[in-house]
Image (tube, rainbow, N blue to C red; front, side, top):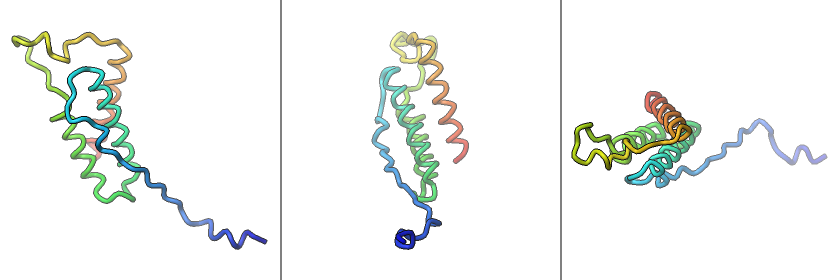
Length: 116
């Protein structure tokens, strides 16, 4: 009988997945880069929320990531009567599915920010 050699089955296996904060770039300049940064930030936020028992200070890491995303990485829109308004990344045309994805990612990241 080898069942006794296998050990107890009531031990919970904890899988720690590495969190690469470096996936989020320091700055972005076009909509594709903004979308990629939002996708990576959402992925990192989910990893940190799921592993809050294994990673000490995961809420602080998540808060600092989201503050960095919204204040440093994503460019702010220029005011409407601006001399360089035509170069503003937020005034470029977007496809509908890209708008949907970005709004969904922004909503998800906003919920994460409210949760911490």
